[in-house]
Image 1 (cartoon, rainbow over the protein chains, first blue to last red):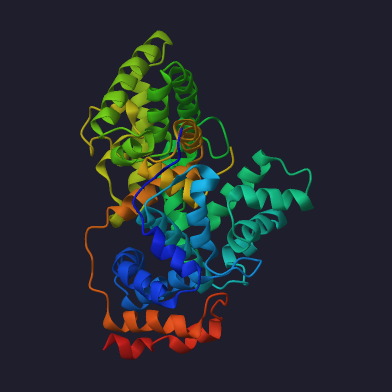
Image 2 (cartoon, helix red, strand yellow):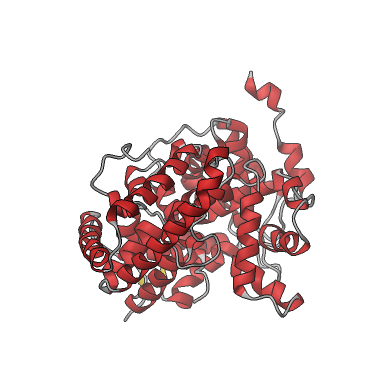
Length: 337
Length: 92
């Protein structure tokens, strides 16, 4: 298949990479408004922060790689056509890179080389993982591989377990974007694959009331039982439906985002796939002898805990809020709270 | 597969990744919470509707960035600090 690309200001970027400062000016002027709009969302009404975020992205775009070649990010973008056989629109790529650089900026503001207090209290491996993931950069996989060089016996499972521990202890101030990530992931874990954090959405700081503590283990055990059957039910779905289900219920993606990821023309197809999945899963649960009322109650308890978590007003999405609860999909949104 | 790069994720978002590679990326995203979240965040960012006016000062500072940091040199923290406006003044 021939490599495909989307529209992008390639010629301009090529000029920038060759060191043409006028082209750089044009590029900056063309995308300054876009970057500022992105930064504004992260800066929460603070103009100074928004400006610093934009400048951090521009600096990040100009930054050289280890071999001293400037604009290494722009080079990677240009080279993606040869490397991965595709090149996105420049704005799509820029939004993603900008978001990552925003996170770097916030991290730096939190004190780059001083461990946050809540991380200092954790054990040595947690602290090491924190440094590898949040200070040394790269993906989590990169961090794991670096750590493996120092700790050959570190399994991916152990790494993941400690990393989740670190995520749970990070305060909002020190890494609000990770915290946001955690909140969105929490309910999906009930339907998870038995991995770390399985069935423990109530562990999110602030979510637990004292009177819930005794009930928690029962709720978790019930959730785990239902989750196991659900996993088996999901495994019987057709591949496309299964993938949509994972995106919606496990990863908490919105309908539109799922349509994008799946390459559907619109999100209606996502809803259709989910409706099909629900029908099949209900039938499977009945055959497996799972009490649907009990399953709904488990979901309701989780929704109750979920409601205690501070909402992120920018990211509210009625679709993604409803999909992690497949068994009560026909109920009104507030009904289980 | 390992976690996709920014180039791969944005190409998937735009629907320009060749079919087999796209299938592998989707499979990864559906099982990797962090990458799925990255994708969802990208989607939200690109839906930004409100475009606040760019402050005049920012455009100037962006131009100044070029002069203070020619290609091949990154900006030192002290340079960045010197450009920073005093917050108390900018708030008035």
